[in-house]
Picture 1 (cartoon, helix red, strand yellow):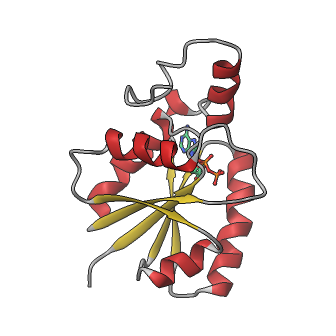
Picture 2 (cartoon, protein in one colour):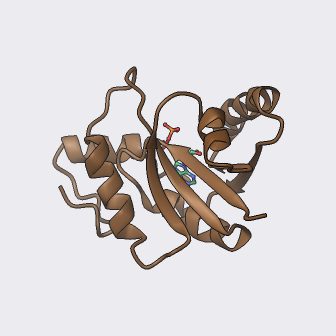
Length: 152
Ligand code: ADP
């Protein structure tokens, strides 16, 4: 059976922290779907299609990666595409506590889908999409934190 993982997130925008998690997880799976949640409750800086294009451009040479937009529960999306794994990145203990409850609830909802975590590389621990958005809003340079494909 093909090993398929979903890496869900907002990717508003994708950062080098996300890229490092993806690159380290790739050898584990046959296919990795980077899945952008279309969450109407969240305020976004960049439109969905723009976020999707940046991810596609960043990983254009990687045939194992696909990018999808999804609505609703992440586990329902995994079931729909026959993905057995959810991939998440961990930076801090706060990330861990948040992710732990989501992963445990997801497991109740869909026992056949397991969540795997990859610890961030130390240099990317402080990097988050929200900090990147703050820097952009205030006219700063984010080139150290995002892939070069992210141009706005
Ligand atoms: P969400 O809104 O679901 O948190 P994000 O796009 O912010 O979506 O993050 C998606 C995933 O990437 C999450 O698992 C998050 O913990 C992880 N992540 C974000 N930034 C980093 C980073 N710098 N290093 C490692 N993982 C990260």
